Length: 236
Ligand code: UDP
Figure (cartoon, rainbow, N blue to C red):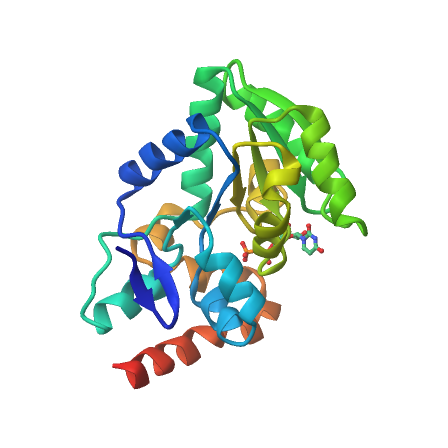
């Protein structure tokens, strides 16, 4: 059973359990997808029924962001732990490298997905990259067809929210891969274009604060966090 936080149902899993479930989905027939909502995405879903349906329609809904974990705790339905999308994605890429499964990288500015693929091939021996494409395309169906033609088993879909969630909900079957992961700005981090916060910030649940320091223009987006907590308090 999923844990409901303002209409989004989260799977109550640890990182290890999430990775085991991800591997299971990758090995089973059909098209599956994983979403990693943070408070900002939950707020976006509340205002957009199509985004809400796309998020709740995922095979695995992981709580990315400490805000969601706090929210669930405030509602007295605690989640086991935070499962950061980028760490889950890294674990799944490692699984693919070890099991001979191919991966496609879709999203971010031109050149970023290629650089991410190059870095990840160096990091994980034997990783098969079936193709890459930047995230600034006009034709969604053509992007899904490119994934299918590449023969990918798994695809990272990094178009920002809720665009990536809607894309996965609509084009899962058409893309021909078993598993799609919606991972926001992860390709920028894999490519070295953006940095993840130092471990001090991550360990103290202050990653959001680090991102704000690095990029003050995110302030407007970040104000979704107090808004989210206010909505949770009201729900309670
Ligand atoms: N992006 C994209 N196509 C678009 C809009 C955004 O590929 O039409 C990319 C953008 O370049 C960035 C990612 O999507 O790499 C979203 O990053 P953001 O920091 O918003 O994601 P977060 O991890 O915060 O959800």
